[in-house]
Image 1 (tube, rainbow, N blue to C red):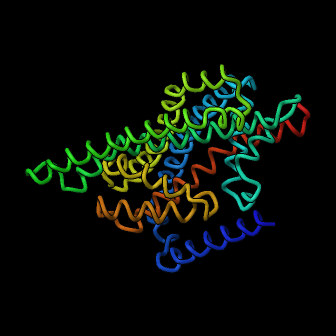
Image 2 (cartoon, rainbow, N blue to C red; image 1 turned 30 degrees about the vertical axis):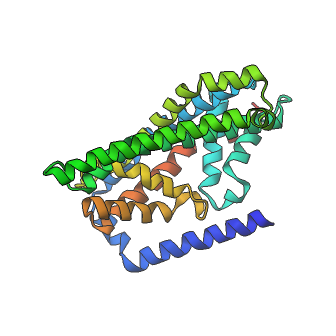
Image 3 (cartoon, rainbow, N blue to C red; image 1 turned 120 degrees about the vertical axis):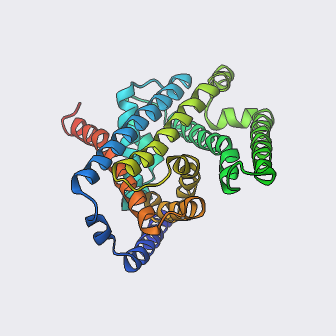
Length: 311
């Protein structure tokens, strides 16, 4: 009941946000101003990038599964990631994308507790990758916010940015190390890890973070491809340094699949950094959202087809 109530609230919030956008801006008219072939090309290119992103995330999920002795092939990992993402971006999200991924991977007498550990560790490393990307981009973001390298005042933004970025990275690593040492046994028991498996997670953490970093870089490139294909005339550098922060906002669980939140965040960051018109921001973000949904369809269809035919 609480989950259904929460999803109902998400639906209401999502509808309310888009009602505001549609009431204030004639999005149909705006879309009609773009060539249909350009729109379809931008949708296809972005969806292709996000499909590759999904494969990278599947590799990460498979790798974590192997570390925890829950071995499944890349196809199973991709299907689980696709169907989980598909559920998260529909009103059925009360089920939960992570729960769906666990259910999809279950079978063949696999341990649900261990699978939960696999999916949760996958989620944590994904979030750490996004945090790392935001930290790495922070100096450039602050420099751009300061107006570029034109005087001593703006050069100070470089120093400030790198100082804050390094400090945040140090704090993140130090805090993670503290948690690992302080709650070593708690973490192992929570995820049903042996000491050797726990050590393997630590040893492979850098590789998992790099995979997560690559996934979010591809997401950012998806926005840039839409910009270039539709000729929205947004500076790609502005998109590269601001979109990861907009993605962070979409992780707040108060709307369906981040819809509405993503549009609001994109409008805010692009208005602040690039004085991009709100209508252009909406076209960019909504097209990206459609591409995300499109990217989840192939894996989901394959999963349901296999399920129907007992494969």
